[in-house]
Amino acid sequence: MTQNRQDNDTTRYLLVVEDDKGLQSQLRWAFDGYEVIIAGDRSEAITALRRYEPGVVLLDLGLPPDPGGVSEGMATLKEILSLTPRTKVIIVTGDNDHANAVKAIANGAYDFHQKPADPALLALLVERAQHVYELELENSKLQHHDENMPLRDIIAISPEMLKVCRTVEKIAPSDITTLLLGASGTGKERFARALHHLSPRAGKKLVAINCAAIPENLLESELFGYEKGAFTGASQQTPGRIEYADGGTLFLDEIGDLPLDLQAKLLRFMQERVVERIGGRREIPVDVRIVCATHQNLEEQIQAGRFREDLYYRVSEMTIEIPALKDRDGDAAVLAKAFLSRFAAELSSNVKGFDDAAIAAIEKYTWPGNVRELESRVKRGVIMAEGSQVTAQDMDLSLAEDELGDMPLNLRRVRETAEKQAIVRAMSYTEDNISEAASLLGVARPTLYSMLEKYQLDKKAGRAEKAVTTKIAGGTDNVVSSVGRQ
Image (cartoon, rainbow, N blue to C red):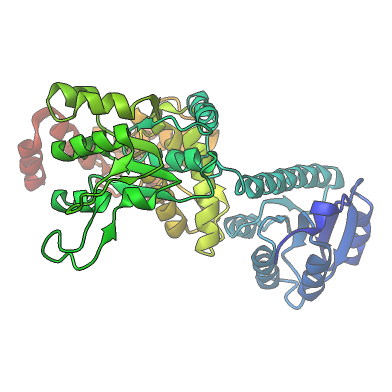
């Protein structure tokens, strides 16, 4: 089911799913600027959801036929999110039902509010949720619009990448030969496609060939083609990839890996714009725009005698350097969110986003594999996520404390991290004596046992820290002997 009613209807609908008649009456008039729809059970709620497609739903977990439990409310939540994933569901729970509220959040609810209901506070929660819903709806429209744009596959907000995009837009209408430089995974092929789609040749073919992926003995025939009988197995006349690109764009990826003898033949083609098939004598004119790319430093290749200087000047009439992902301020998080949306849809996942620690890790990580690595990590995260949010652990992206630096952590995480460190150090100082460690920490023994269980620390946490300290100070052999003595 797609949410489109609010695309053309300015009315803001709020669905209240509540079986208490008194609370229904109280909430019906509590929200200015909304048309409030009331439902008393799951069936009525789903009917109203399909009809009005509200941006926000207030949902009581205790619904008939299980008003004393939460099974019907949880089932309603699941059905709402499966039908309209963008809808923001605010759970209204009993005063002592915090655990189920947290469970509902893990299952995709947006927020929760405990009874007795405070209309003023609920109005603030609803307004915030509606704002987020409308922002996501607008973002979805922009993404849909961008799908029809020539640069639709390039997502960027950093000044470095926006500069590259502007350069591509300026040179695309011309036939200037362009060299794209950048590390593997930075998006060189996407920019080559953007150059083609923005050019007058967009209606013709874009023919791409990876010079590093084809064996050297086959590369010449791939590029230039061959005549029947030119060599064993040449049973018919076969045009090369350059000919196939006639009228369009030829993209030579990893041109830095092109063998020297083929560099000479490519140089002649670029100068004369004619090709000769292997075994042929006829010169065949070809009209193409040429875009090349490489992750190598061609000037160093020239100095080493592995790349022709005259060819370099031919392919680099215009050079565009694409920065590594670590050098694009803000792009990693934006790309990650775009990948998450795509994979969540493809994999039919209920994942809605990243938690704070995951976003911080994405922004801090150096991404040696660039955008390609980011895409793989996010896909893994969507698959591994157990709740509605992807964690750093889901992406196998946990960073050491010294790598985290000044990453934003909320107060709860700061407190938990400090408590865990204090426990480990106290256990180490007292050689894992529970009574002495509890006294040192200023807590009772049962409390320390609970904290060890909470942080998944065993009763030998101190010895584990000592083993790590020994490894840092004295090397692996010392650790082995230390562990062996225990």
